[in-house]
Length: 88
Length: 200
Image (cartoon, rainbow over all chains, first blue to last red; front, side, top):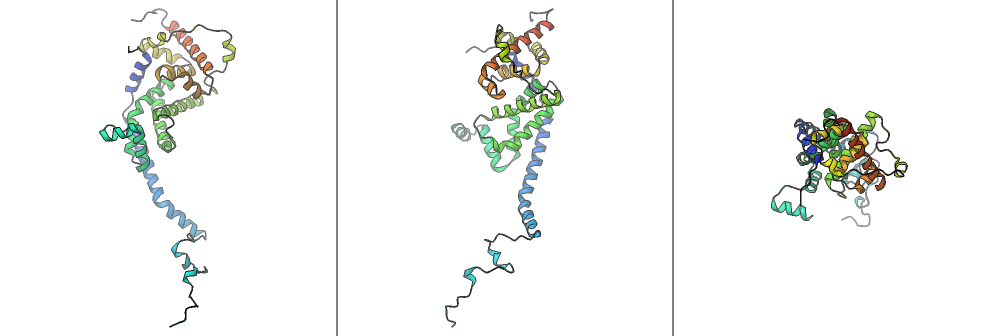
């Protein structure tokens, strides 16, 4: 197939060649900052939220293993003494 | 799928989809840098063609790639990555032009008025075979809307349907806009190069 002449494509190639190389560094440093910030949030945010919840009077998840240690909470049924079994 | 598998097996360059998948799974900026290297030139060319300002185009490229970085998880692969990226580029530059020049609409919506008075079409070859420097000059003098629509058609090979979907207009409206843009380009060319109409 015969290649058609297209001055628009030639112009595009000329403009593409003018891309400043330092732009990659600018974009790259900004994306790295975002990545670092994302990791920090990922690492510390759950603990920070938990701490904030404790500060405003909330407790940890009631289905968690330490839930029975909370003062004033009723122990789980399996922790109750079984009065039907006679003492040895 | 087949393309991705082939490129992995053959150890060839990863496809855009592979790079995006890797980036989304490990958040490694190197994968994004590879995408940047692939497309930054094209994006810069589009920005400079639409904004006609080198410094503005640089800032626009940076902002567009940051936008892409932050929204990559939303890319749903309904279209190719390049189509998605170029549509972000066009939207970004059009918004910038609107804000800077305070133009509410880029394309005039007066198709019904001019459709009653048909104008003769100018062959594509008139623009396609224009000398590069002269085409650059003519494009710079065209109104933004006309310039963008010509770039979409002749630089990006977008179909009339794709352009119509982008601008949310009918295909006949877009055809008319292209025809008008070509006439304006021809008029600008004639006014600048009247003394030297035949290119060397």
